[in-house]
Image (tube, rainbow, N blue to C red; front, side):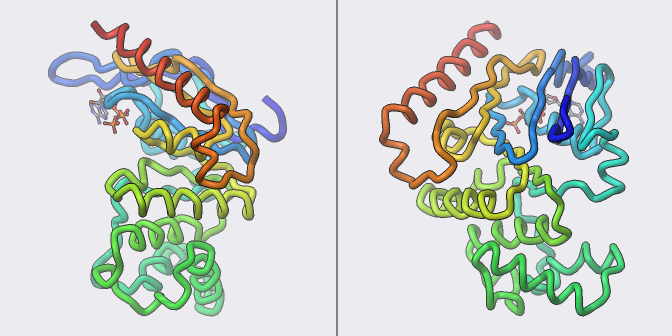
Length: 261
Ligand SMILES: Nc1ncnc2c1ncn2[C@@H]1O[C@H](COP(=O)(O)OP(=O)(O)OP(=O)(O)O)[C@@H](O)[C@H]1O
């Protein structure tokens, strides 16, 4: 672990006790994430991607091993507001305007009105929604709503962004556009991003590091360091380098699946 280490998981395990017996959501997970990394977690349903993200966010508590966030416990990191969390669904309050939704966590945290207004403007422009502050969620497309939820997660300017399959419900064209915007945002803000996805092209396009996971028990089967440059136009997806990484991810997913049967 170095001073640049954002997430450090050592032999991390989490077993849920259920009526049907124990569920090993995570077992023996080891991973280091450095400042500025864009890390995707990919794997079949039930391999523990969400559980891992929730452990980072102090929303679940490991039953074995250790995990630190910025060198401290997830609980301390949560209290220090070390991360923003973006959920699968945008989860905006329909009775609040877009500005009102983004402002809500800032109100709770006691920022003064001028600072709230400044931050709302800043994050809306970061996600390309300048001018939409007064609109209500139902007046925005699904992709715009998801961008607004990213803006809300960015509002208190945490260096770490945890994103749980934020674009899963969107069509491919919108998703491509949001992927480009997210890469741009990552590049311009130097944040560290942990991103859950089911899509191989999305994982390869976005990431500096791709973590391939496998279920029962949930574990990491491969960690791929991407050789792709930081600046990535969408057509990088047609290059041999991109296709080679995508193959490796697919092979990793297949191997993990083979263990199940
Ligand atoms: N609160 C809980 N109680 C019991 N079991 C749980 C709980 N949360 C998750 N699980 C189980 O833990 C395993 C991992 O779940 P998790 O949601 O982390 O997987 P995932 O990889 O994110 O799946 P998906 O891609 O479907 O979102 C699954 O078998 C799930 O059923």
